[in-house]
Image (cartoon, rainbow, N blue to C red; front, side, top):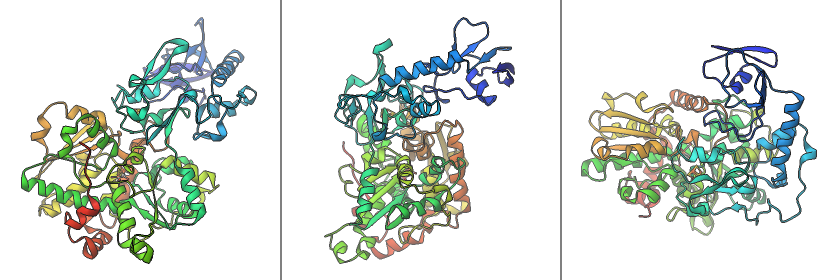
Length: 574
Ligand code: HC1
Ligand code: SF4
């Protein structure tokens, strides 16, 4: 252990800790803008400069090792004056458009200015300057991600997360030095013309509003306010857990009921569960796997519910497309059923005849789901996709006291029932575990296999495998970089019968549309909550879902039937 003194307070920290770690251990707050606990420290923003006794100049706390006996001051007049000047420099180049900024209220630069009462520093820029939607700095070419380079503070976190440190896509990098340093895409192309897979991990780490999800919540609110269309919302498994964090609830708190109540208050007529469609996905995908096993073709089967992964295959490895399951993702299945099936018919004759259709919104922890809803063959199933963060913005915007809402809310039926297997879709390995539970049943080997598959769980391992007697070996790739690693050789072709890939580490609960968190344990906390919901569920296998059984009985026939294929399957761009 190392002993240091921070603002007169002695504190012990682990070997290798930084002065910032030491300050936080001591309960001392040092402002940061470019620091993220899971990424390399660049010390570009200079906000965390501290005075270390004996050092000639202030040192950046985020990357200065805590040395035995160090005496550190974090809040001298000189440091405060420096931070004010630093903020003035950032603000001089920052658009004065907080009222129109998507990240208003969640921007760390804004928070810093507010906390320090530096309002006099705020620049007053003439109209037409950076910040107007038409300026040269904005890039809205991607369906999932918006860039506003005028807001960039050059922290470098987007390039880190897109590059070597996490996703290994290298779509965003940095060019230039000193005052010319700026983030650029490959060949400086608009984002929508690069190989960006829309995973949104860059939006999770951007400390300001330079990278955000393409926002759609204003249009959704406007449509709901009009009350002109029957509206439907479906919510993803990972959203109901992480949304708690947006409202100060403990990470890992399950807020299903509160969220349902908030959605009703926002004006949705029908509040449904994407988990219902996750069970349906398993019926289709599990049956597809067994059919491919029988035919000895198209193996291994790749899961297809993660649109970041589907984007990656189409862009980088179209030769793998025959391995992708043709089963639609739960989001798209749910939209198709809401618009063109038993539910739509129940809304009235105009809906049954196709002259009217409900307005379908989904809430997802994912930015790539915005792309997915626009894909050829899928477009029209879902009208707007919101991220978890956007839903939180809507709730705040309407002044709904989320934490005070009752947790008793229930999803509507018949598209609302789901099993524990559907809930675990939200965690890395969950889709595979859910498929194993039902495939074992369909293959007649259920009795000899466990219900829970620990080997497929966990948010830390990149590649997880398990062997299913009577079926074969399966793999889970936790993050797109892990998938790239697995696919480098040729062994995967022989070794596995099925492979799950989720583009974001942790699966959807680590998705690019989730709340921004600085808690390094966040994925474990969210995953623990997901598995706890499954453990308590009265039904834990997708084939046990009674609403799913009723849908097959009333109109789809059997999994993979022609009717099921028509409504629930898709194709890919080669
Ligand atoms: Fe996911 Fe899925 S699990 S992709 O991670 O298959 O986004 O949560 O909704 O569609 O169900 C996301 C989550 C989600 C789909 C399901
Ligand atoms: Fe990179 Fe993903 Fe951001 Fe695209 S969305 S730039 S792939 S991190």
